[in-house]
Length: 383
Image (tube, rainbow, N blue to C red):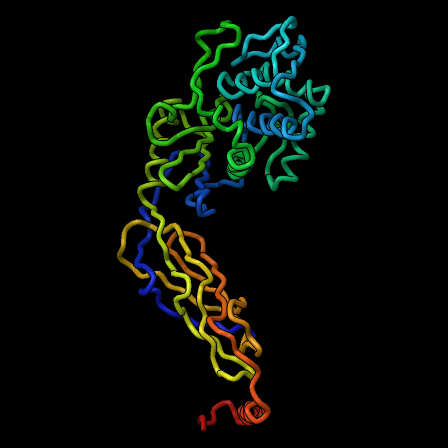
């Protein structure tokens, strides 16, 4: 049976809940990539109009084509009349142009080019409709359960929907899977053939604030409001956040900066368990010793709220008693740490030492004790 042991973690760390963050965003998701911790979830699984933030999926599809060797950075793409006719933010492409993959990446990321997205869609899949189906299928395969695409650019469409969590999952993927291309998200200017000086600037309001921000994508339509998929790195920590439904670009910029400051200042990295330090003991069945010490195999670092008042709690959970023989380093239990306002941390614990099988006489004595305990009424005093 599962046998939980409960112990206070005063020996580990004292902690109190972080100050609650009230966001005016319609929906939001904040994630610490370093510790894989969700710091905020406000309606993050609700499919919403993503506006230009859905361009991240088109960018991902192109990055995957580069990785697979289907295209190179120097590969030229044709520009259709459909792509040229795209309105909103564009690279100002025309049918005579043959932009390269590298130029299109810059155009999508920095200029938020709707025309660039259509060029990529048609270049990879033949038609934008076929590409949108591929985007939807690929999103599902990546675990983005609340995403559906009708186009490559985020142009308003009732069938173009993404959740904030899905956008966050996508951002994490772009950062971790494509480090050779991710720095483009931090570039502040791109003007294709000097056609649009006024549209050359990256719209991400955080890039100029010196707070470690280096991506990813803004979005705005009348239906969606103002949104941002952002990321920032300070020290050893990186956060990713997604917000949508803000009333103005000013509100978006202010809310994004508030979220970054809150995520880094209200939480800190702490070593909560040292490797080799005995946390608890587990009962042993038919072993030379009746109990075995439980330790963490390596130092355990977790994100915790910064202010220290209340004590974190924990429990050691294992299926026991553990049958001998036991080898030092063998996983025996889990340490579950309950951190206020954060998901539980589950840490494997291993045996501190070897425990050999008991001798014949010890095994017989142990078996007899079990039989006697089972035969006694539940309210009988222990002998």
